[in-house]
Length: 462
Image (tube, rainbow, N blue to C red; front, side, top):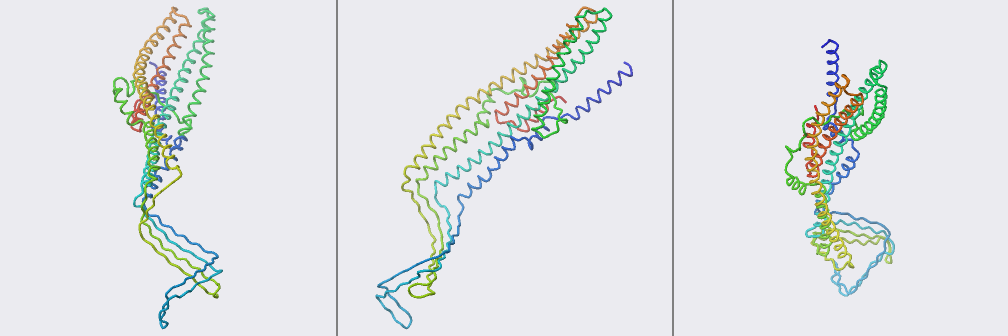
């Protein structure tokens, strides 16, 4: 090996090390997407309503206090007969008649009221509804996070495959350009037919078109990941899954029945539908409870004042002060059929929600089965493509050797190169699909979290 070859090898090693050092891993992409992805931001804003709903539920059983004040023009007259009247120094008189008269004056009223629910089935049902709505907000947020993780992973691996496709096409194009130059030289020397030159140029033109398409696809995929993560496009250097089968393949994938149990218990969509059914039932309970009596502890104090002039002169003043502390009973008697109709409507919606839950449960079971089978088949496909790559690379080397000694044509070499490139890309796509299927299975089971994403990240090439 010459010093020139050693220097070139060292330079390539340094470039490779720099590229790996600058590579973006899956966890970094997810961490950036958490604060930047628009769909997740919408879900985060919706999730913010969960805590206020729980506070509303708690507040339903706390005291309510209110103050009422009013002022304006007033008029008041009163008359009393057959009353008993007594005063110091005047003795006692019976059969007395007296009255008050204010025909125009100023009226004021101030009242303070307070109440504390003691027994209220309707309010209890409302509290349950609010807590269920808060639970729904929490579940929707968890589902949104898992969906965002899967979207980010898909965008990341799509970019990695597109990047690999451009690299492979570029390598092919370099090799074909070199072959075209060599074919032209050999033709001019009379050592190769003109058809070899035409074949090389045709292949070169085809690869140029493929490179343009690959570059366009790469730009689109890079833009999608950059928009989701907020990271600069130039900094996005994703990594493909490693050569070894990723987690969840035949050797490490748990039984289908276990995944079905997990999905039945934890699937985000199923849990949301179950909560929706519970909320419909709580709505029916609320309207049913509307017919029940209610008991409240109540207290109030009130003062009314009217001053002005009337039939007996000016400066008249009437003032009345009332106070009460006790228990108030409220019994609904008739609502015109509205309450019973609302209850029937809510029960119909509950039946609908339960039917939707049963249908979705079957659909989720089918999705789990299909995804689990996809992982099994994907692992076999990866292994088959790895074996195929070994075979086509051996064929590629043999074809080149045969071409050099005159036993193979340039077209044979180009076909062998194309087969090798196609297998490399198919293997990269198969590994990415296998990893995505594993994440999809975790999402279906409600287990796609940062721990699962970290495991997937470890399956990427170093």
